Image (cartoon, rainbow, N blue to C red; front, side, top):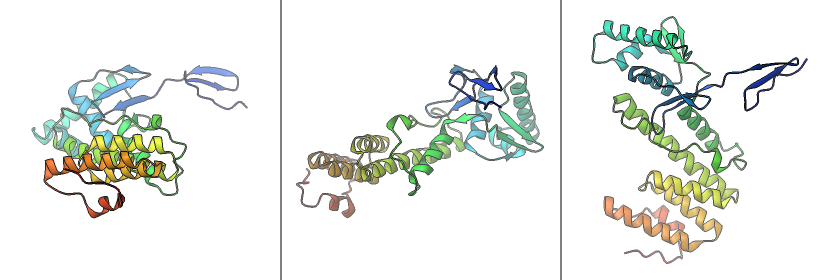
Length: 256
């Protein structure tokens, strides 16, 4: 019996017969909402976007009443429940099998690929000390971006900060792991991305400076240190920690 093989064009082969597989849905929340299939964007109303985004950032089943209350908090419970039923009906009418319904519970279909979930899984892998990250490349990193820019719902603001921290820890973790593995070019690129994501984050600067030193570039390390000192003093009127200055012991780090 032939084994099923799925290639880039979605062509499945089983027992000598061929059938075309539909590509999976992709839901992007970083840099803005975008639902697509096979690279083709799928337009949705504002209400449907909010429903899918909320289910996407909660990777577990949620009670209908809870979802309705969060997404339509400014109307009565009865009206909110009606709005939710209408949204689910419109998705089914459009042939979009995106939400799993189990009695009083909802969740995003596990077949939908979500960028923020992929980022979280990658971060867990990178931060696992037993995982081998040497085979990872910069091309494996998801493009950084703000979660749902322009959305100001309370749940979005909280999730935006969580995702920002996930991305920063991911980049810092890769910078450190690649430095230890001697992959200095990749380590420095990850460190620079972490610093760009949060210029006041000392741990990101320490990771980048450590990569420069391990590569044998103390001049770059000192310049990075001075950049950090300047922005830290300008923004917060603070000095770098002893842990930071200890990295450059013996080097001319005077700044002014």
